[in-house]
Amino acid sequence: MSVGATFDVKMQQRFLDREFADAVSPMMRRFFTRAGGAIRKTARQSLRKARRKKTSEMSESERIKLARWKDRYEAGKTQLKPVRPQISSRPGQIPLIHPKPQSLLKDRIFFALSRDRESVVIGPELVGRNRRLKRSGDFTTLEQLEESRPFMAPAFDLIFPRLPQYLEQAKGQ
Image 1 (cartoon, rainbow, N blue to C red):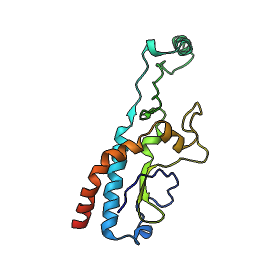
Image 2: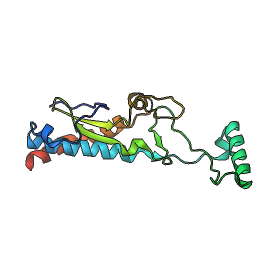
Image 3: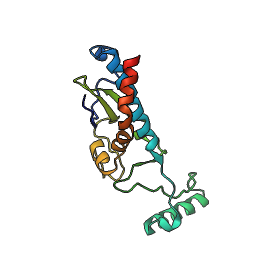
């Protein structure tokens, strides 16, 4: 049995759909469910909320923008209370989530049986067509995000040593 990591965003059949997964043995279905679920959970737990920037970390343009926002707020021209911007992750680090508006990344990580029914595919599902993942437009695909700020591969690396144990448990049931 070979084990590998795959990053696929075109999950037509999700979460081991009953009709699709009937061709897989019950033991392998249990193994795929346990392994996929563990990697998914680890990936989701690795995503952390972005903290607010300290004033010293803000650029000059961010400080000016915040000062103008404070002036508008104090003058009663806006009801939104001014807040410092959030930090962004650096390339090579796990992406940080920005909960407002709701982060699409953390809630859209799924796992599914691959088309050949011989492996499980784990990763985020793209929401909508041509949807940008970052407002600045640096990333237009999930593959670009994973290359720049990996979080699925580290999750797989953490769970990989447990896969033989999961297979043994699936055989025993």
